[in-house]
Image 1 (spheres, rainbow, N blue to C red):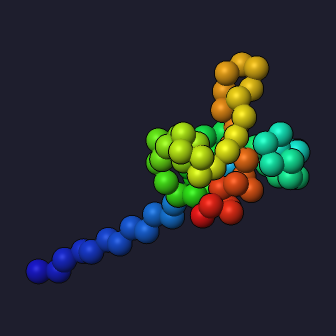
Image 2: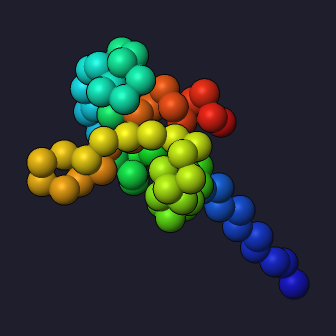
Image 3: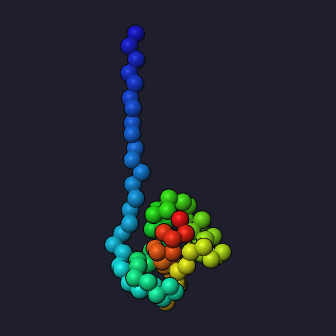
Length: 80
């Protein structure tokens, strides 16, 4: 009797949609402002963890006029 073994490799896909390089209003550095989902994908953590980092000051960001959060990519890279 022959057995068939199938090996499936799945590559984790990181999707960072077109971000814009701009000046962070908090640290005044030239960087990208990411959505919480983009920040989580970049750092490979859950989105909730990014919100925790913002709450305790390990990363910083701004809130858009629409009420959406944008996280400074530089703060994530310096922290990480």
